[in-house]
Each structure stands twice: as C-alpha cells, then as structure tokens.
Length: 275
Image 1: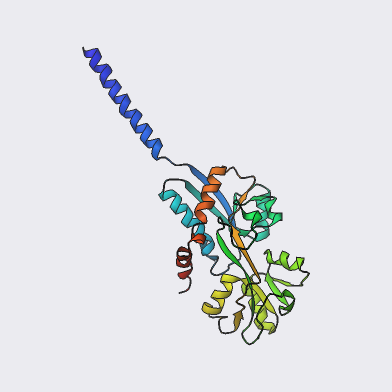
Image 2: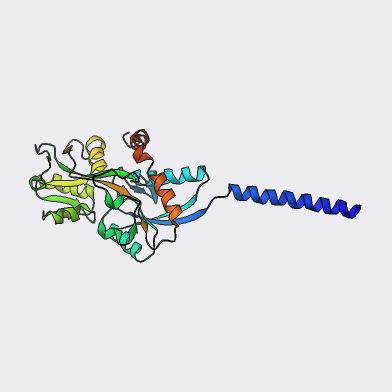
C-alpha cells in the first residue's frame, strides 16, 4: 500500500513538473542579438549624439519596435549600435561584422550585401512600400532672400550644390551629370551656404524643416523648397551574412513599419522634436 502511495506521489510531482515545463516554454520567446551601425554624423532630428547617448527618429523607430515585440512576447532583441562613418558601416556589413544598417534607402549596389524587406526593390512610386520604416528624402535649401523655388528641374538648382558626404543623393546627382560639393555634414553645408552667400544645399527633408523652424543658428537665414528633390522609402536593411532567421527579419521589419503606416503615431514621434 505504501509503495502505491509513493508511486502516486511521484507521479503527481512529475505531472506538476511537466506542467511547469510546458507553461514556461509556452511563454518563452526567442532571444536574439543584433549589432547595427549608424552614420556618426549628427543630423537633427534624425540622429543626435551626446556622451554616447543616441537620440533621434532613427533610434525611436527601432526602439519602439523592440519594445512592442518584447511586450507582446514575440521576440526579445538585444540591440547594440555602433557609430561609424557611413562608408565604414557598409564596409563592415560587407565583411560580416554587422547585422544591420540603421536607416538606409534601397539601391541596387547596396542590395549586393544587404537584404531589404519585400517590395523595396520593386517600388514603382516613392514611399509606397508597406514595409518601409519611414518616407524621407532631400529638398533644396537656399538663402532666405533667394527667390528660387524648386519646381522639378534639377538643372536649375542654384550652384554650387552642397551635399553631405557619403549619402545616396550624391549618386543621384552623378547619374544626372550635375556637379556638387561634399561637406562633412548638413550643418557644415549650410554654414558654407551662409558664408559664401550663394548656391544651395540638398538636405534631408526633416533636417530642412527643423532647421528652418527650430534651429536658432539658421532659422531666420534659410528656407527650403516645398517640392522635394528626391523622395524615397528608407529601411533597416540586414546583412546577407547575418545569422538572423527569415522569420525574425520579417517580424522585425513588419513591426518597424507600423508608424510609417500610421500618421498619428509617426506625428507623435516627430512632435517631441518640435518643442
């Protein structure tokens, strides 16, 4: 009788251990590590760096996605971001040292080493891919007293044209056979514009808006054309050498894209930089 009681007790203990194991695994989520690279040039409100603290829209979008995935117990991501010159970011991707680029437009050249969300390479109209992280681009920045307004003819953009070193807009200008000058970053380009008193800057759309409306150094001195020079989708592409699974990539890209498809949510992200 005692033997039967002991066996019964052991079976109950085993049963509860088994249930605990099943429940624990049911609530478990995959944990992955991602090493990403971001251009080390500050660009308000896209990316700002202060004592190794990174803030800006580039980081808001991916951090928001990571928080949502963890909250829903779908994916636990340990993200590490390295700051480096834009060119080196792509070199490290090519050499298999990184998993991700923080916010980059699609180009055929980049597709050789990076994987983009579905639809990025077949987008017929700008900013129509459902899996884009954000819609952004470049506009023409000129002196406030310059009557020029960009209407669509790049040949009429005031010369010299200044651009931030390493950005894809340079490739677009090369294709159009339009000469340009490289500057270290957009602030330096605008400073050259103010110093020389002529020409223009091809700057990021968000940068242009915030520089004109909120930058104490520039806002009374420059303006930007309402019609973009270049309008395109931006993504968080992943290295083709990364060990991330297809399932994890698709889940992350889908979650990152949510604000781009929700104007109220995207405006909420932008609003905190308008103060």
